[in-house]
Image (cartoon, rainbow, N blue to C red):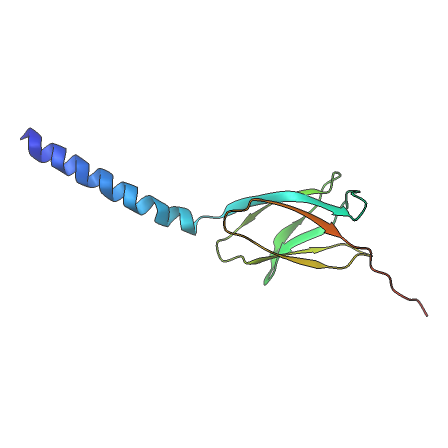
Length: 110
């Protein structure tokens, strides 16, 4: 009686170990970072959002920092701030931290 229970326990353990990565791939993950200008000054209140999902985003805090939960299908982050060129950054599978610098955008007023 003891051997069938041990065998059953081993099978259940193997099944759980083999299926857990499947769940992890479907889970949202948190990414974070900071947004600064080219001089290293934080950009406060800048927009950070997922391309193609305009309702999924956040703004940077007083230190230019952000944190955002993204779904597995998210491929690109968009960073924007008034007076600066918008920047797109590819979301990498194993990267959690994204520190981005935006360049001031010069526009002519006529």
